[in-house]
Image (cartoon, rainbow, N blue to C red):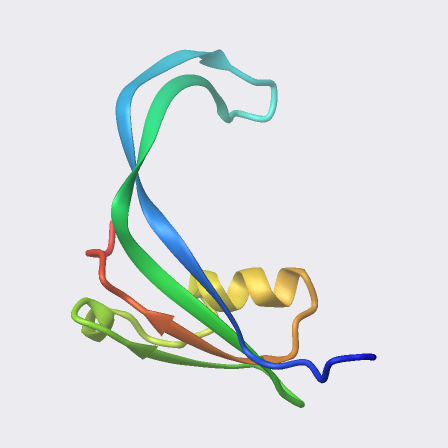
Length: 96
């Protein structure tokens, strides 16, 4: 039996850098990094529902600082993998 596609929700936990060291530079100008990270119990939530096009609704206590313009990272990631979906972002973490 095939199940009809429905919404998918994923939690995106905050990442905390415990240490970050620049160890060099690559030929393309990017830095080489060594890092030790842990993930917190707080974060943002993304929901994707199949749709004919791509859209993004932003909500949450930190959602007012974001727009759904073409440079939004959620939309850029969805376009990069070719997703057509109605996306929802619950923004609980401060930007940057």
